[in-house]
Length: 225
Image 1: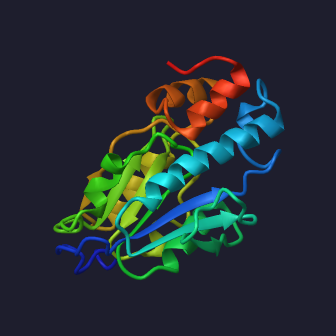
Image 2: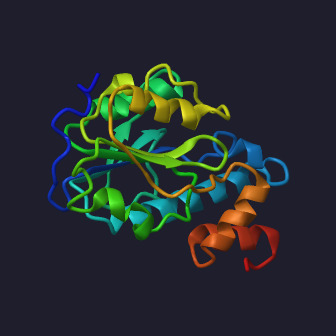
Image 3: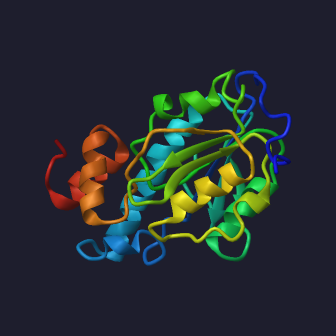
């Protein structure tokens, strides 16, 4: 089966890829619950907002046909001007991801809010003019077994529906789904998500000058090194 990627293996002009960030409104008790403890729900929400801010700052600087947050909740002051807001659909995470892709036309890259260390260099391969030349999908594996980025030349929701989410094999199952569909897949760098306090310290060290690292330093009283 190659319907999802048929005709995708050709160069695309710079800025022709849709760039989506799937995220939750950073409210206490709704985000980063695995950071509690040692952080309070309010502190975890502040870290989530900082992570989202760093992610959106990078997104705002990248060439894209369209920039949007696929949001569970309401937008707030953390949202930069010019970034579209799309409400998340109902259902499990696989259904919400599928719906986000299904609403797009043309090459689309979706990333999460849990990797504030991402840089323009991390995403440059999938946003370059030759990104889709001989390529149907881009896959960004996460160290915990999930994935932090997924790009599809021709978005097909069925490539995501039914993939088990938030389990150690999520990334492997999702990537295998792409390969089994006959798609040519290229990989992005493996990154670490922020789920636990240990993750927060490690990720902040990778991006010591970002909002996330600054917020972590304020909460812990320890400068990130």
